[in-house]
Image (cartoon, rainbow, N blue to C red; front, side):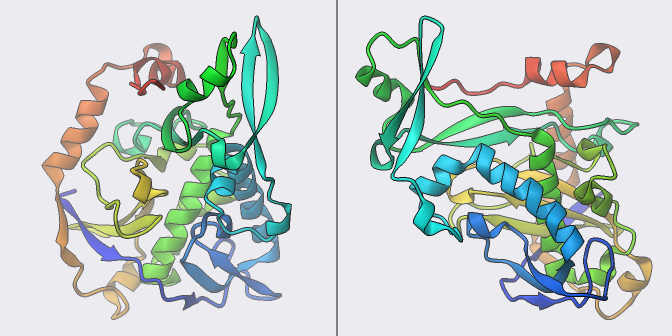
Length: 321
């Protein structure tokens, strides 16, 4: 891979006319949000998801939003189809002498942190074999309200004041795969992705999620000032490998993720529908990209293929104040 060049994702909706996941054309087809509606996602594909596949993607997206970001969505007043059900208070977890307690705090006084999972890079870039599942660590970014340390002053004697996150790393990675795929279809059209492996990841038939989806550990691809979320779809040159770089909650400095979509269909690449010019302003030097992965791997290799324990032990996570 000599480099990656950019094709920015347009906000204009693209009409597809078949399910982008299974290819179904009969029956009703719904609008597909690249970034979930509940996260204020602005990109949509029209007539792009059948009812069966929509149930699959809705389930893991719903679970991600409920488990990772219920407090963030509440405090930031993000889109919801049940605004009237939004609670004026949020649960704060305390622990005294080993006993857990939950107190309700007004959302205007709640310590709001953005939980952002961190993955290894997609293992297809650094491993010769697929690894089942995906493993993650968690970074917490303070958004607003008091810090946990400041809030703890209101609860003297508490050994712990904070929040517990019980989420599925696989569901989050599948959400990223779905976001990256939808963005790429929006940018290029469905014809480029006749053989993409990411469909199986999204629908759950490929258990090796981390082979295609991971964190981006190189220099930032997306900025932090153009919107709540940022996505860029890129192509390796020479060649036609398609990549999506996803930065949810970009304006808060959240980390980026890398979704590999595989090579574009050769017939599509040879057609007039393939972009004749990709934005040269986003050319990334391959040596820099590869160096980032080697730097990530320089901490050593796991023994006995125990990648999950090794990742948890070697990933440096900032500590909460």
